[in-house]
Image: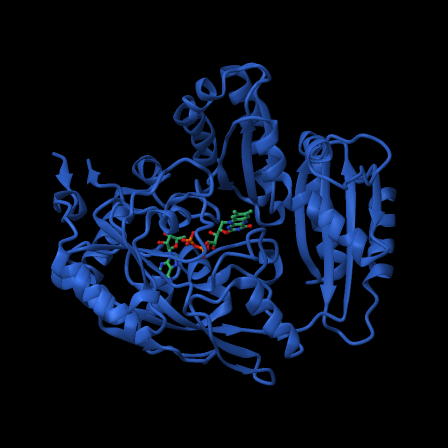
Length: 486
Ligand code: FAD
């Protein structure tokens, strides 16, 4: 028997005049967006896969105002889509016509910073790059770093448990958060802004909200962990003849440097070629052509350390052991920035190279070569001429297994095969004990995949949590959980 989930049974509620009047009274003119021209950016979606239809965006400037908005929505039965920087890649911040977006962009204060204690407290709407800069000004490091850091907000990072390029050393966003403040779906405010490393007083509630993509509550503030600023950093681009050598280099890096490997990113030759073709100001950093590349970064906060020396001897050893074919160590900040631009520009370069079908998956590190080989063979057999571009945070076992359309194929005809390609790739991921969403979340994009790849017991537990936190199903309905279960 198929059981309808709560969200599906709710009928969409029209936004009536009395609700809108009450909302305007709470928020004032600066806090309410209803002009179609101003709504456009809130209704846009990063990958162009969805088009939002929201006619109302609430922009509260404080936790209390957020709570009043949420309470009002609860009274009127209006569902809420939380939105931060709107850079998410799974359609989780897209709202329908009868929902309202609650945007945290005006809540952007750093509440306090304790450099000695390595902690800071921020509003949810602080832009990630601003938090990094504030931490730097205080002589510290906030290590969360990703391509969208100039516009994504910490509330969105927490809601998606974002990963990025520093996970290998510092962990995901959930590892960087000590405390949380959340407006619950009925409008109550949960103050969990503790700055404690140790707190074993029962269930870790904040961990439930982290990664919940706005389905359990609206995050309004967070206490973040800071780290000592690095004193030495070394960056290199390495070329390899096959994938097994890439993971061997990671293992060598770890055995030689201990815990100093802070980034280890995979780039395929195809990715390098499209980046050189479509992004301005880049040149091939290595002379020969290699099927695979890795961007490797070491960093430490140990006083007096010189990681360039360590990198040189490490790469020397890798040459001796025939792991590496070629490598270059950056000699200036400009060179380092240009290597990172090459890596972080890959999604942009792909847009120029044609339509893409994307997968954000992880497998155990030892299975990365097998996964890439098997998945590339499967999609090529199904769609000859397809151009796989597997890249990303390979040190975490996280591959962005992106597929560029065959040359000359109609874009839409290629995109129509999205589900077929997902099935081929995700079946291999599941077979290797991996995850169909390593870091981007589920959003609306992967809800159906949850039915295929998440155990029924896990889905039942997740539904029980959803019902406990949000019995009326008003927080971001349709995100994460499939509407029905077999
Ligand atoms: P939004 O897109 O606004 O929202 C994302 C989800 O979180 C939605 O479900 C929304 O409802 C919910 N949400 C937002 N704010 C709140 C809140 N305050 N309370 C409750 N729920 C909320 N992601 C990675 O993990 N690693 C990467 O390396 C990475 N690189 C990227 C590079 C580029 C160029 C781009 C465009 C995106 C990248 N992303 C990456 C994806 C994206 O940047 C992250 O998911 C980011 O954490 C989203 O933050 P945001 O503020 O834009 O959230």
